[in-house]
Image (tube, rainbow, N blue to C red; front, side, top):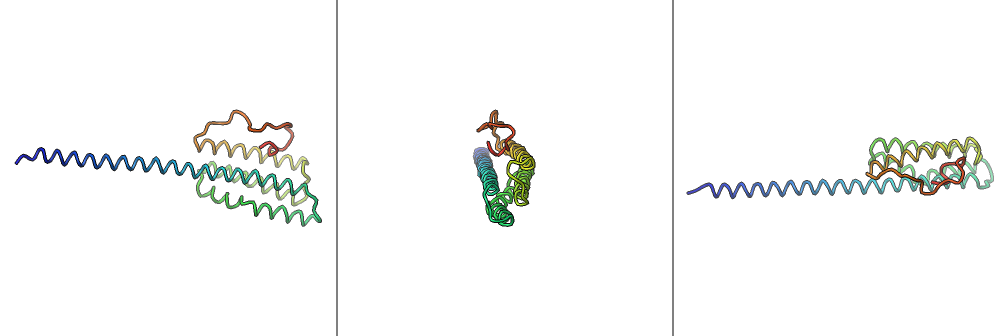
Length: 174
């Protein structure tokens, strides 16, 4: 009996099976990478949206008339708690790469500083308030830059809504 045709058929079948397994594994890796990218995109979108909404809420609450200083402080701290930023931040710690986590944490602490400043009586538009908003704006710009890099998106060449007055807090245009 001639074994050569049988061995070559078996070798061909083994090569075909291995090639199919390799192709399936590569396809799985590509799909896994796409899903991880989609997950980070959703996370980044949620976080940046939460940051923007919280900033607007804090400013609006600080500008509003309150019956007392304590009522103002309570309203601000409650808005911070209910904004969802703590949950979004925890998700960031679980999913995002370290540079993005550090940048998002910096934004979180800037917002916390803004909230605490308003709760302690800082006036909207004061020099102290503008400095806090400027720090938040710089931190947010760095965070977005790192998020875009992580997502494989090129840098922005212009702002999506230019500021009318450079002395205004960064969040007015962001």
